Image (cartoon, rainbow, N blue to C red):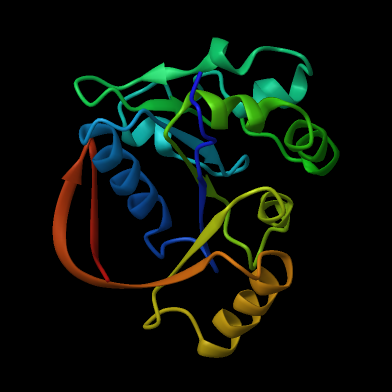
Length: 196
């Protein structure tokens, strides 16, 4: 067990295709490679694709199964990436109605146990504009990374989402402007991105 609690970073975007999952994966991989014990959670319970991008079974057991089976140990469904040592909690089988189950899981001991076990926890969430699931996470994380691609996301929509985030998480907020620029390769997934 760690002496201090690990921070939880929450990566979210306005809509699909803004590079949120690529940023989440990049941050988690770099932390793991630098020696920080890191957990990456696929929190997009409807369309999350981190498992496929990393060469795992598309519907490998994960967060969705933990919501369906309250009390099931989260450690039982983790996957480990070698040689980085990054540990992953996949999405699991897609689940539609998540609000009640997610609230219960987030308010239990799960995140406290993860904080005590890891040096960093990164959550890749569903986009905020079309789906409200991600709002549930905002109350329990330490810092929000809001990833947006201004060439494809109208400014008024991005501003509305920022206000939503600030209303729930006023302290820890960072904005990443993501542009299509150069090609990178992580695991088995190619994505085009540049971020500051």
